[in-house]
Image (cartoon, rainbow, N blue to C red; front, side):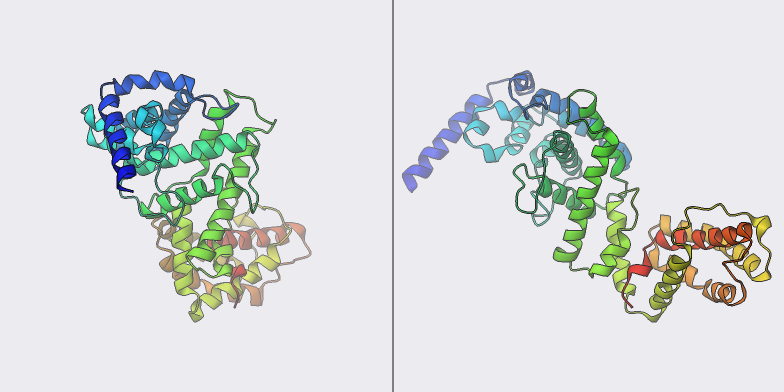
Length: 378
């Protein structure tokens, strides 16, 4: 064992000494000869995509101050693939790139971003502490996902040869642990478009591919929240109710806060209220609300209370204060109950009926911005 280990270290030292004689930044040109994946170009092209995606991502996450450094890191992050060290020890990808850049005198934020950009490997891996590395890691993994889905590679419950699920899990972990408050959908769409304008795919549009990746993330979030973080299944279903966006960090916070609220009697009031709203408005389509079509005193009062409360609730939700937002909505409950008691929603006059349903739809939307409480088991 000692002879084998000694020989390995001697090899590593030889590769280290010889690789450092090369102009490391200039090695990027050699990436033109290293295929990323059949039909998806080479690693030189991948670094160009990463440059664009990580810049877009830095702006979306409010990390514009890191943009220039992580863009530089994106350009050089795959150079180590053509070094002697990584050809011999593939597990050192990224690590060696960071160390070789450090040897060239590159800024710490740049070389450390490269050093960490393959981390973490899945949701259960160690916690990443470097924000630049986290942003570059998300960009790299989103590029992988977009490319493989673009080429029609399928992920089954038993097979995932390209690590698609693992990369999605890692992205969720990074977003949660760095508290990155942004919608992932525009980033997914941007990454898909990088392939859509340069390569041929199976015929799906960018919107269809974005939707497919969106569904993959919803599946991974559901799996992680239920099986790893042990949130109740009904609460996970309740907070995954938004089909248009993917604010992963906010979904996590909502799951956490709704879980904390779940046993409180006040939450049961929200559950019963939301179920009642859902039952009345189902199959109605989205209707427009007209104030001048409110006739009864009770519906006028409810509209005024709603109009007064909505900005406050929206502000609390925007500040991620979900418990106070729920409390504000609960303050409206006596007025809502009075509306149901005194007003016939299903009026025989279509115009009046639809306007009352529209008012209830606005209440449903306000609740759904926190969670679909109708899905929570009482």
